[in-house]
Length: 248
Image (cartoon, rainbow, N blue to C red; front, side):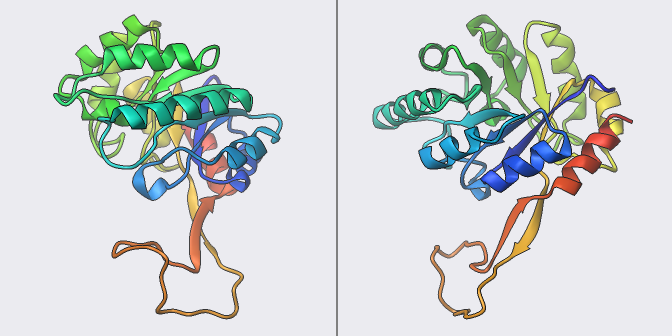
């Protein structure tokens, strides 16, 4: 399976470099992965673009939560798309829904036009739709290049049957991008089960803080918060292990 394409979800320039070193083809650059990913800063995008030898797709998501956006939030998304394009990204990633959970086709079409000539991926808002096959046909009709999904389940292993069915329904009309929750142990089996050709996953490992002086009872976030002195970042060794395993 040497023709597999690997996209790694990252939230730092170090992550972009690690993904490249491990042999990934591109990254999806995000902020706030604890919320499922939000739009990274323009400074982050510009610095990531300087990393040569790897494709750069950027998520456009103004906040966490659902995918039903206000007019003001849509204006923010359009401005962020403009900024990302100006920074030279290869792809734009977004997803927008109506209140009934179906794809907001009119808004998707508007954002696609705004994104061109960059490639467009419709992200896992797809997994929040009531009928994934109807949603797939909508995205195909709109000309989206790829859709990110775990088969409307928490992980691709749980959603493998639906992902396989979506791959069959898609044919060569749109790319099914999948892999959430994939590990080196499950990678080859998932590829065989689903028939996916493009894999999207994260490979995060704990990175300790260099701070010697610490205040353990002071926090910058709310009640649900990550540790102040530890973080997760992309591990090149884990990405490489996943790529090797997926290729069988």
